[in-house]
Length: 71
Image (cartoon, rainbow, N blue to C red; front, side, top):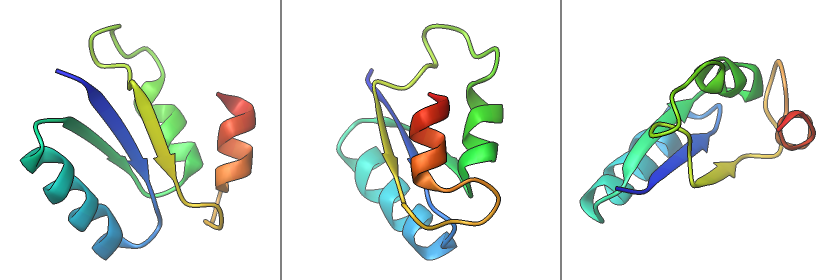
């Protein structure tokens, strides 16, 4: 099963993305900002690491550009 990490500070977007992607058969990880996404990935076993990251650009704490740089 492929895993997608969705990062967005708007809860409505996270819920909609999770619902749509899970209906298509993906495992979905969700985070509210870049720092939370990095924490989610820190120490994650290889089978949980995402195959794709979809991120918002403008978010509090750590934005999408900062997240991409950190990854």
